[in-house]
Length: 126
Image 1 (cartoon, rainbow, N blue to C red):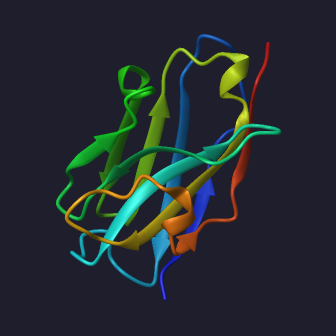
Image 2: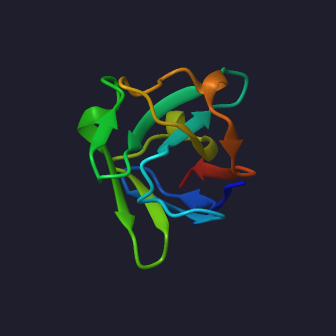
């Protein structure tokens, strides 16, 4: 069973870049079986799918965040990462990495993800 763990700073200043990593254990991020995603939940709001990276390195982004989001991977560390630029206090949220079996169309519904990290609180504040 795959396990995921988020890491990164808990506090980011406005206008700066938010960078998080997700370390995967139990399987390789290059296996064709999984799609790997970043999902966040702002305080008092629902889960929001941000983007994903496939086993072959292909990336997919939410249209609303595409201009500020980059997802990459380090296969030597079995990690995939999130970078979100020009953050504002509205980017304050619990950020999760998650995985689910791959399908022909990337899944954007957070409830359909099977494996989740514990989440990391990121606050954007000066």
